[in-house]
Image (cartoon, rainbow, N blue to C red; front, top):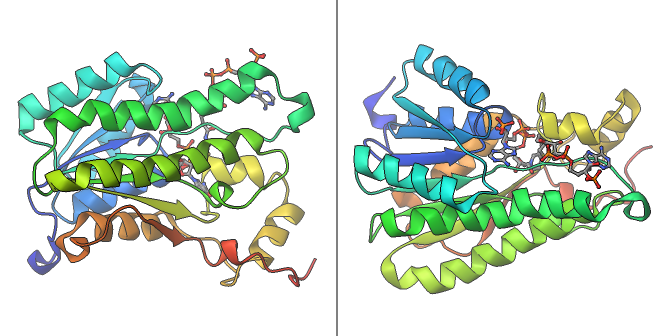
Length: 260
Ligand code: COA
Ligand code: NAP
């Protein structure tokens, strides 16, 4: 690996929701750019297996099991990371849960579950990290989704949760900017070979329709999101805060004339 590409060299990063998919791809990208990465998810088995994969790729990784719905668990993990490696430079909050269900059939607990994981979980992660952040210089990134700004059927819970995350991103950017802490979000479009896409593109026809409605008519890759997050966390984005980067192939443009 070229030393000229080590733009996050020695940075202390925590990636939450990283046992699979996009966030695992983000952890891999941050690590490949030189960051020391701690990865977190609910299942100790899944997060341990993900850490083994990253270590086999030569990356410096620790792993921690905890549920983002439990504020105390997040506080324990952030304290452990800071005690072991020093002030935290980078936090990626991306744990989420999702499923297709019409609002009329959604139980209150189904709605609450997604709000708890996505929105309250994001607050729990960032507020747990806050006392341990490098000041000035820390960069926090939340993973949101096109659902934050585009209403979608059978996605009332995820739309509400992701919209909340985008506003939380802006509020924390405003409050914490004075301490030299930047807070941004990345909104992925449909990303190939992920659980999130599998849950929304439930058959090949639907997958084709979603792909055809993008300005760039192909699904993204996890590394596309890793690159966007890495840029936001790098010195190249040192004057960027409170924004959402749409890394979505143009999904938000809502192509009304997409071929069916
Ligand atoms: N349709 C309708 N309701 C559903 C549902 C579905 N497909 N899946 C779960 N629910 C409801 C449950 O019935 C329950 O409500 P109830 O108590 O009124 O019956 C509520 O949601 C909580 O379900 P539970 O299985 O207890 O939640 P959990 O905390 O164990 O798991 C999920 C959370 C449901 C989000 C689970 O799918 C998950 O862990 N997802 C993580 C992976 C993922 O979603 N990846 C994509 C990210 S975009
Ligand atoms: P994924 O592979 O299912 O990733 C979700 C991760 O969150 C897993 O590591 C899961 O690990 C963890 N997680 C879930 N609930 C948790 C909890 N309560 N506490 C801690 N960790 C928890 O899904 P993905 O598709 O890659 O999605 C990743 C992110 O991208 C999500 O924020 C999603 O909304 C967003 N996104 C995805 C797409 C897409 O096309 N896939 C598009 C737009 C946005 P454990 O099961 O081990 O806990």
